[in-house]
Image (cartoon, rainbow over all chains, first blue to last red; front, side, top):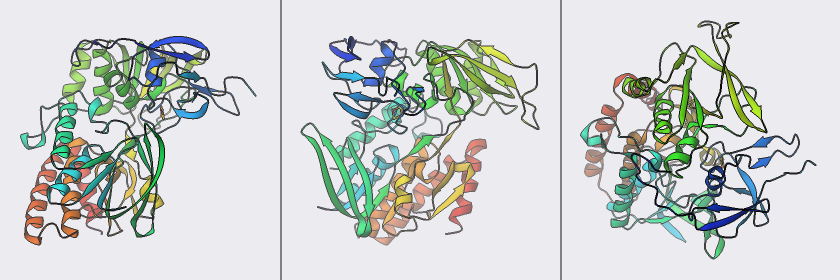
Length: 97
Length: 365
Ligand code: FES
């Protein structure tokens, strides 16, 4: 996004991430959470017991609301983890137990 | 591995302390869990207030760049993506350090430790507050100014302190639609200049109002129900409810010290509402109840980046002095200078309450 103080956004979406099995373009070097927002995805996980949706809340790695399953590893804080080409990202606890 | 000084947190307080302390000759290691240093400085695009001595008129992100350059010039070592998971007897620090090669578990013994872990946003709860789309104002600020992505299209800001006003304005700058600012008090909390910019853009301020609930569609926020509160009872006045069409609700309800490590270490804490709540007690040299442990920045009471840097500098010279890198006279002189500057920062309607709070409990230790 272009910005009056930060200037023109010259980044290019050169990375492809897989979210729940579907490919999405992402900026190299951006965080997973930001890349999801950029693609209109705001639900990162569901709570274990009540299956309630959660998204980013603090954006700086403090609250763990944004955790997802990344390359098979659960509980990864997506707001402080950067994307990599081909990264496999899954909504945590997507299926109700 | 042994170090003179280990600093936990590479934000304004930690970096300023590192510069000052290494300048005196100490060997300093800064540890930060993020993969970029600077703490929250790089999301602060606005120009700072205050006097010349306090980087007035300079944007937070530029202050961050200067601090990083000074760290480099003074040989400060900074470990990023590294998390302190515990601090044990005789200053043994346990760290998980992530590098491209994988995760390492490292133990370091430090002669002096500075905790500069910052603060964390307070939340307020209402039905729907856990829905995706409800977030801290600082979270939204990180998204627009650091990640350059909008957290939503139409935003309601809850809280009109400086964070609420600045982030509200920055959301508009970034292209979001600010639907309004809700404030439970009868007047705007932050600086008039910030409020005026928002008002000029035609954004309504809902004073004496609060959020009653967030509406949900497909698991995300789709509206906010607000209402006017009785000034005395703070109960919703029936019939005053309004439904706002927003997809994002930002909460700017202030911050509190992030003192988990200080708690783990058993440092003595005090409760100071004007500074965000529970925080480690400290003296005028930022020394905690443990003589080897210092605190600076938001962990030592939530203020702002300028005061955090000066507290960091105080801690930096105090650790250098305690380690024998600085003689008594120059330590006292440098300390007095910084304290005088800090005092001038804590003037005015906002600083005064913090100044009183700080001096009150410092007088006790
Ligand atoms: S949003 Fe809080 S940890 Fe990621």
